[in-house]
Length: 183
Image (cartoon, rainbow, N blue to C red; front, side, top):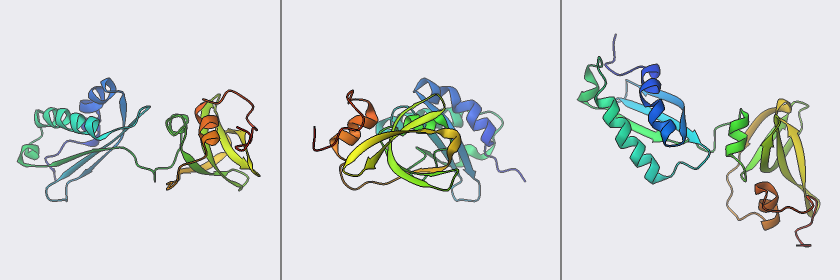
């Protein structure tokens, strides 16, 4: 049975250049032909956040490209195109995910079973700097990505300490173990 919709591969090939020129890459395409109307969801990520204006622009351009796709019969009969970012529930599984999560609070499970909660700092040399509490101070721990078995961004409802953010974003060039009270 044909759905009349493009395949995941067709969507990625057709839209990949459009998203790349905007500074994003397509992480996944989910096609639900059983929904009414059928749904095409494009999940994109990049080094800068995917804001609502960018989503609207990409959606309009992507729709125009999809509408002009040859060999896809019923796509013009109606479909819903959704363009979105991966969301906070997406696990961080690669170096680029950690790089893009810089400044965000994450919960990490290491290969030895231990857990850490901290703020993502610089990612380099197959490792990530993680700003973690150390008593009343903050310290930066270098975590090899090979030792990370699970990492998920945490939702925050309050503003983090300024020194914690500075350590994570690299704005603070002093000692990593400086206390919040000492700034």
